Image (cartoon, rainbow, N blue to C red; front, side, top):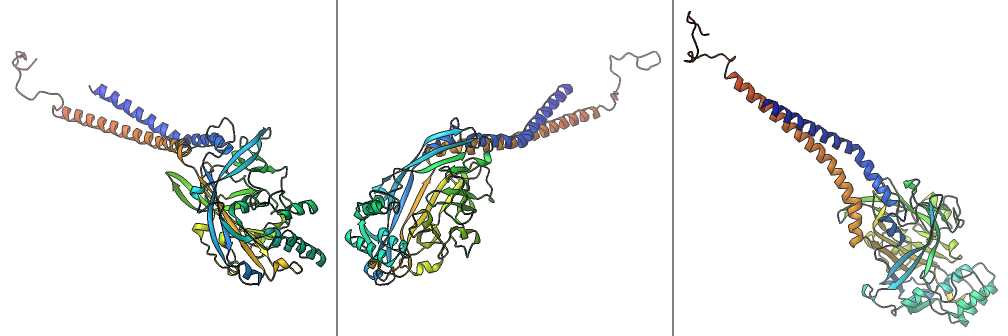
Length: 498
């Protein structure tokens, strides 16, 4: 029986040691297996059943919410008074993005064009596209600033042209026309006699060049040769760098195309991306960790230096000529029109910008932009990009439409592009890239714990068996019989036992 017990004990000890060994091996090999699975599921490859469909066609609803700054006192503004505005919106549009002309290249890059379409969502909006609002007329006030240094006679002729086509300094039109375009005799005239002055032909609208259009020819890295380069821009429209800014640093195309980032992020990682609409690269910084429906995330936000001027932040000197901090002059890529972008309500900008316009009240919750991203995969979980379009207005002599307008950076609209992963896509993502790696991680500790427990139990059983054996042997001394001789024990003739 003792022999059997010893064999069982040895068997349990061996099994425990094997479990501990297997768990220990998993401690070192497990992370490599998890990382290999993440790499496999994040590289841009048509055979990738998780990340590739998410990259090719955004599978979740994405929306653009537009807010207009309705001018309350246009007549007084022409007399030099402070503009007063009220925010009108949101007017919400569902955004559909689809990549086309996808071509993989031998140097581990892939090129594509991404087409976008917008569909009005009345149920999510405060009103209809027929709602009427009043905003500055970019065709008049923008052109006036652009022609400020031209000869006096030319400016007079331009003012007469405005009058001929009945174009005033402010527009009062339905939201739909301001967004997607309205017929203008002035636009037809300028395109005919001053070709290239306007960014569009036909109807003129704030977003007319965005709907049913593409963002240009992107060529990005697939990550097959180096996962740290996945999604990073190799070129855009054949360019490796931009030409419209004043320094090599500002002309760089940094980061990704703004949809996904390389995996294995840390709090020290930043989110650089190139935006064709902003005509530059931008970079978000880590703010805090978080959780979304059980999935760990990092929140990234815009640093205060994003739209700072060259005086406050030297690396931005190349984006000048600048005005106050907090607004980016994009005239160099907008046909020299005096257009600036900023955060909504001049959030994170020089307070003087808000002093020039009444009705603004910035705060981080409503006007700060952010991206919540799964750090292990670089996949965004929740996105809210908020930007504001502004027009620099001033009085220009000989162009009577400008009246006595005081110099002011005038907010026109701000918009938010937002979306988050939900539904079956979230479930698939959670299962393959969160649950399974977690199961593998816990498995290693389970094997180690069970192995140690098995060894301890086996040793305790063995010790108990040994103690029981020792106690049984002790009760019989050295094996001698101490009582009287048995009747069956034969006696020798001298009286001793045989």
